[in-house]
Length: 356
Image 1 (cartoon, one colour):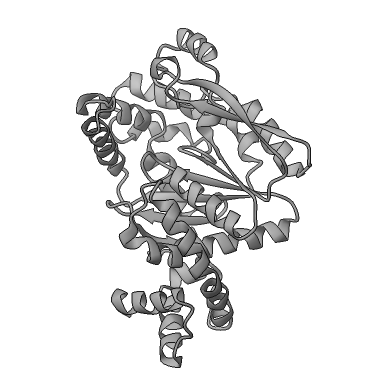
Image 2 (image 1 turned 180 degrees about the vertical axis):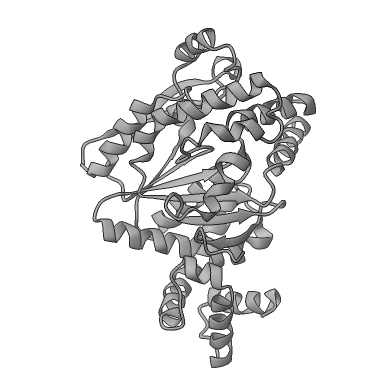
């Protein structure tokens, strides 16, 4: 079915108008036609009508609320309706089902390299879930950074840590403590750490924590959330920019430091991977963001600094080594969402379901 035809049907649903039988069949066909996405959301010919009914009932109210919200969050209005229908709504409904099955707060990990939209997805899902009557909390790996003073001491011990972000710059025990408190689902107030990237002249520091009560779901996002150590032998033939022995030693050390994060990842119930169709897009996206900031009169990095910044993190945990294998590993990742160059989503599938 052509996108224009689908849009017409979705717009009819927005108005609360009943679909003609032919339109209902078209909607069911388009849903089942993308077998990878249908399978990822547990949709099959037997339950497609019930699944679409639930989604259709929620669409008008969520879309109206999201239209107002998106103006403040730089979402692309041209694809808002289709993205809501194909991704955000079914994903929110799926998270609710997982939450019900657990009978305690769900800890959903969101993994993705720079620029893939981790924080945007977490914010959108938090908003949609709230509209549906569920309390969701968005927590970033950035919120677990060690304090400014602690990171200064860390940099003295290891001068290679020129940027915040690599393994070793986070307070893992703090993360474990927070997630354990959230999983208990007690009514007692919980302090949620927050990080201000603008503090200390841009070096960043802890800021006042948020105080929350019981939550239904936690969306824990970060550029290496859930990433596990790999066999060090692969660094002998690592891709650029890992060129020199110094680069390889840095990569090996960062890989070894992932071991300390495993108890934190053990708190995750599920892990979702936002996977760019080309990992080099992170560099392009970062340039776009910095250029826009400079054009708006805000501070921003020049292209040379951007390249140094992005390549630094590729040396630390290279996407080809740490993320690419996950798209086929159903034991470590539950859902993969491909991200296109224009930030729209592409294929959506369970790991291992791609042909070939």
